Image (cartoon, rainbow, N blue to C red):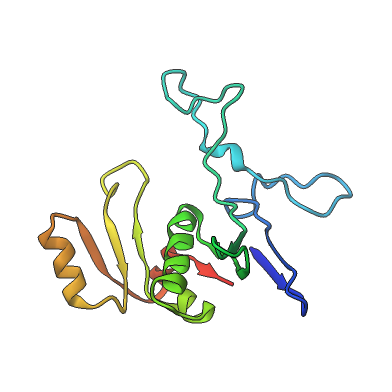
Length: 165
């Protein structure tokens, strides 16, 4: 869950609290009142796997609190966060591009329809899912270029695109 705060003088903070899947490990330390995360679940116990659990390795994390500044001036532009597991890096990019390239305000940038390229291994790896609201000519243009596209994704299935603040 992202928590974003901007003070009246322009100081900003963006943070993310996450247990990862559901309630993390499901382990609650005695008398502590919180559950332990399970961020290490993206490691493999297969010794031949490139992401085998071993010293010096790091799992792919999707905890991405964000602050955007102007590259030329260093001026603060926005503090934000995008939830959604492995969609988060894609979502962050889309939110920033919507603000910088398409001149949307932060709320419009978060509300705009998104795409999600499935990075998970399996039959649907590499499929580009498109949220309801992306114009049909864009969908057809992607298909003509050889992309495997599914959509429009509607209703509760839209959760794959994450949420934001």
